[in-house]
Image 1: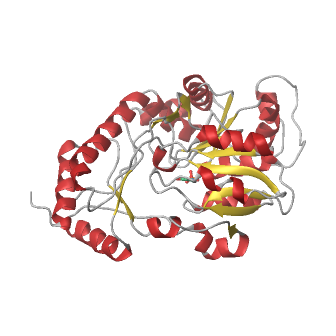
Image 2 (image 1 turned 45 degrees about the vertical axis):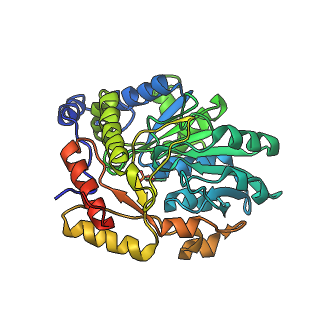
Image 3 (image 1 turned 180 degrees about the vertical axis):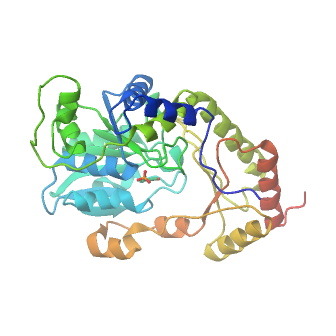
Length: 376
Ligand SMILES: *Cc1c(COP(=O)(O)O)cnc(C)c1O
């Protein structure tokens, strides 16, 4: 059996969790929370990193920091996870979906400007599969129209665009450390803040509306309730799990990239029958996923069944948000849906995880060839 995903475990996780227990500090903002956030700040050149309880809560915090007013609009792709859109609704806004580009499955930067109205306040981009959106174009549209940019970089930890880390380019960046992502803490995430002026408000949001973070740093001698907030600070136990992987971040990234390239080499001769990912020159990706696109929904269903029969787990996603029940209720699609629905029906993800062996990649490639009737 080759599972679709195996949650990452590099070896030292338990040791660090035990250390957190011995530190007598298992709630948040202790040694491991600090170590992880400082590591990310240094490595990616981020002004401020706050660990959160999930990628979703990082997105929620980012939208709250944008300070939307009821009816304000946020532009985003429809081909994404529900969290991207729910953060906008919780923040009081209206999601306005635009089409994606078929090569990367990222928001089509050329469709953004037409969707801007006098209610538009922000653009929420998603770096799908860890491949960056066209950030230079998107940042200049935002600058021209005075819009905030939020990067849903849930899948893009360790990815870069023109040498800059995904998540550090927009006003806010959001990572996920869910067990399906390249680096994990079980459930968790991180919020990246570009402009210093938001740091304090973000800490208050994360600490139930109090200035407890300042108190812990010894900057004030008692803490109090100063604004609305929520509980977004993860436990030290989760941060300790993540720390083991950050210590080996390059090894993990290289391992995934090796599998990705092996898939690419194995399948590139088949591009008259299937589509495979292409990575724009400006982007260094993190091998979050290897997808292929089949002819249509029917062929994809047959493909997943074929792979399952051979003991290989393959999955598809997403149901485009604009056609999902909540999307119909809360949002709208701007422009023509040329690729979102058509290509989401055709896309399937092959097994991809840290530690996936070359032999297993070869087995998957052979199974794809067998499905397509390619003689070996
Ligand atoms: C995984 C993911 C999220 C949500 O992250 P959680 O940590 O599971 O809350 C949001 N957006 C995208 C694009 C994701 O892939």
